[in-house]
Image 1 (cartoon, helix red, strand yellow):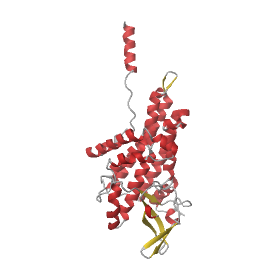
Image 2: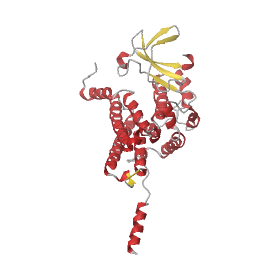
Image 3: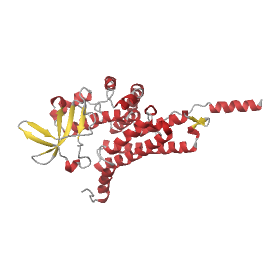
Image 4: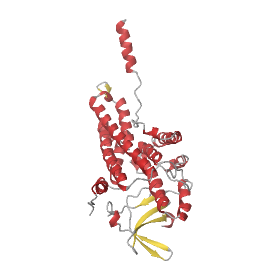
Length: 348
């Protein structure tokens, strides 16, 4: 009888529910207000219910899920972090957490929103005239008009500041833009493009609003790897019980948490109006480097299944490489930080 009782206790112990994958190990969302947390939950529900079940097929087909946009618009997050002009408003902390929730399921969907809301709308909001803000920001906030951000060129990446080749020439009341752009998210189908070009009259780089009718991820990699480790059986038990697998998961979670904490502080500095270029550069450099490590460890944990689309590991692995390079490479970001801390520019 004693042996049977002991066995029953052991069975009960083995049947104890495993913890659900959760990449918010330091509860970053607690830094938000109750209202903000409600919005984050709505975004998470949308991504898990609408995007996660279908996104692998779109990724494999190199296509965008346009049919999801009507439901996405209903979240009413257009203009997040921007005040007035029909924008949602809110803190940069909220914008950052929402961006994490999008990229947690699919980095490409997160890029779509970041380009539209942060780069395209943000450029008009910060540098546009009052007339331009009144004309473009309200429909963009409603996502009736989708924007893109045209900076990178086929032969010009990190050197856009001094080597931009796209030119702009004033012709009466209009401008003539001449050049090429490449790696521009949303560009094939958006309604309005923010194009950066060098004015031939004064050699200054300027932004132009072009109506086209006239012309990141670590969290998702970690959570998918953890869920897989809890379910995948080898030698008669879950691989999550193996020491080397737990070591990989702990290292992945440490990277995720370090990046979240860094980005939270960066958002606080931005909300206070004190963020400078080198603050953002350090965050981009550090987080994308840790991102590559994290998704690589996730792909390793999946073994051969890591290269199969259905595992999600390959998608996060590939998307991480794009995030590592665009909007300024690791090396260029470090040079911005290096100039700030030494007082000496190493740019050539």
